[in-house]
Length: 153
Image 1: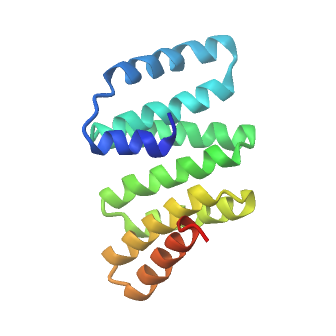
Image 2: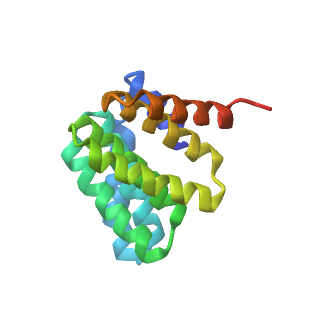
């Protein structure tokens, strides 16, 4: 399931208990098998499940582990997703400047990779963050950029 679908399901209150159990199993099994790619994905997936449950400290811990593996494995797409997810947690904690810094990192990675879908989410989240920082100019710019990418031309 894509990140967007997982987030949509979380907003609708879908129970991720079975998914959470699977990812926990993967987190135990992947190191045993030497599967760092699988471990990185499992950290990210389990973190998203925990975010959906509101267990933000645990989610952030797993996102940090995911980030470390992405850096080690040079997985820029995974790193971009991790930064975006971490920014959402930091935003929820009121740590807006730190969230902004991660969104800037995510933007750079999305532009480098040409990942328009993730860039749309990045700009939308950035716009919401700018609103909380009472920066209407940046809010308008980032929301317009998200809509430009999202809207079919």
